[in-house]
Length: 276
Image 1: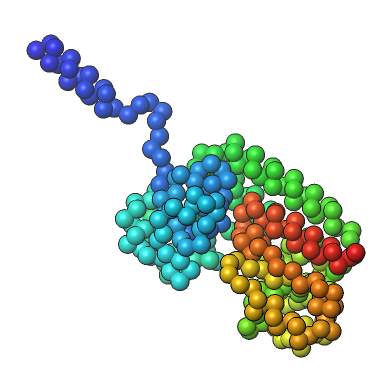
Image 2 (image 1 turned 120 degrees about the vertical axis):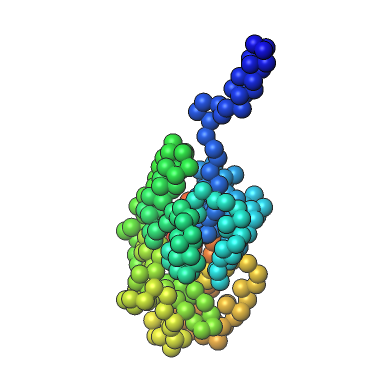
């Protein structure tokens, strides 16, 4: 009887969780930028679901997809049983977010709108996933590079820049757009810096009158020929005449991630070429 009791007690103890052992978080992220941030913290393996276009680093392509910019598949989200859903209020549909909240899911919202906000969001994610030390390393490196780039161009001669967000209809960035702040950091003068709308539709006539020295065209994938083609018929524009129409990686420029500083550096280098 004593032997049996000892066996039962031993079996019970073996089944108990190891002291200090924590259940791994199951995270769903509804934006590519938070996927990149989590991988930068070494927490990418915690992600059990994400949206289309979450493609960096390459390992992120293996994560199951639960939706895209048109909407989230709520059933798939629930099936993955996440402990937390990382959402982006200005990038995800409000109806989807309200539905997730009504179902009792734990929602962690990101709010990045500037380069300094990126560091803040990385630290918040570090707190969330238990990677505070890693977050400090990542943000210190990011802040150092950002400061160096700003200092390099802060006293440079202003260069007028047209940022071609889209070609048909022609669309650019206004005063409150994220890209506008990057152009300013480079010592550039955004052609539509006085327009309050973040991403205004603009006329070719206005661009012609303002006569930019540099034209920047972001690209994400595929051919950019159509976006560049429209400028051939306007050879009088300084940027066209002097062959200063540049294409840059849109993911680096448009995502609030540690790689944004790479995009900023490339943007500044292109703008600086007009000063030579």
